[in-house]
Length: 496
Figure (cartoon, rainbow, N blue to C red):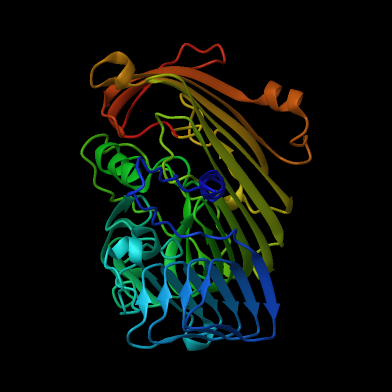
């Protein structure tokens, strides 16, 4: 009989308690194998003396608990009634219904309530996280850091400096969502463009569903737009303007409103947006102050066709939370835009994709690669053309030396990090190559033509770093076109 009991408890995944003498007692519950069950359009009752270990799905019915739950119940479209004396050690999930709990019920497990009919609310109580046995207050105290941040309305840099907007100060970056407990969020970013003496900013209302994974949003805005965000961070571009009278973005002004749907699946984010507004150029501020090179001529704007427009935009991003330049990993980004209406130029479609891959071949030595490509259909206006050349693209070449409605680019780095060099320095050997062209010349599948007509360069970077990021570095690069030319740049980030 003792052998049978031991075999039975091992099958349940519980360590057997073995007695050394007849006075040792075995106080162990004989837990049955969990059974999965689905019940449609009917109520489910757990009586006072019942103990339920099963995994049950109830669709279109109510759950009433007088006894004890050790398993998991998922109730879709029905309410849950937890009566006095009930014990919840397992997990209850209510989707589209309401949880009613009487005083005296003991909640030691987890209860999740997603109630669409009550303002898209989400509640959760978790015994493991609060450490209080028998907690009876069914209330969400605070959301995680991941849930508190917004990627639909990201925080705007309070300080921006460039050749179009001059100095932009955005002191107001606020959100109101009842300390992250509400499923409604109001965001506001407001600032001032000193070169045009005009405001800039965005106001956004977000509504969350399904544990904040689905987001409905609407925004009103007046902000500059650019297709050159991937070249270098906004802060570094601002420092280039202050120190060297340089600007590595082409930008234009957009004023209007947008609305759409966001899907946040932790590492994966998808955003689909409808935008309606006006586009216009932002004049170049030739009075831009700088510490050095105050005689350098500022690059003129691309010809921007002002007018009204309507567009549909879709963005896809994949990035693990622990993605790091010094480790192995991959991040993906893709964006597409369809012009639905415009009174200034022809309709077009524009697509761009990017992949960044890292491979740590040994501790402190990483190979990093960025591959990018873009294409379009219809007549792409010049201010939306792709471009290669310059900082953040192909080093040692002029900014946007090549432009067109198609492009391909690859960047590679061989990184010797502080962990390998045993100090606070980093050495990076890098190479860049790319090509931008018009669609009537050749297409993205014509690899030989892309390589033959492309530009490439190589270089080396030396800088100070820590275990988290690059503090600063000096790059020296030269083009591989036969010219005897060397370019030196100072960076406060990786090349990409």
